[in-house]
Length: 125
Image (cartoon, rainbow, N blue to C red; front, side, top):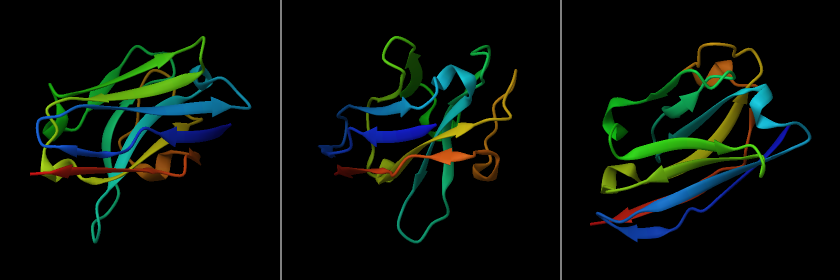
């Protein structure tokens, strides 16, 4: 599967963005799908994910209640809706696919087999 992330931009604190991850080659429903982010000088961190079955969805604590991960099978695209953005959300955001996911999702980057190229999100204060 190939993944293409888009939707990053510069936004003021309190604003919203929706990131998109377009999948090609295979349907994203064949994978657990996740969003990660990496700020300068920091390690890549888990943001949100859902399992291949779609039964389970999870978020890192710092984005709970503000971010929502979803998927559109017809468009073969996964989204990350981000509301009430904060300066600490500034990072490059990556979408990823986990071919071993079934009923559970992973929060570890090493579990994911396929990665998109990343899209920059900058939140100004």
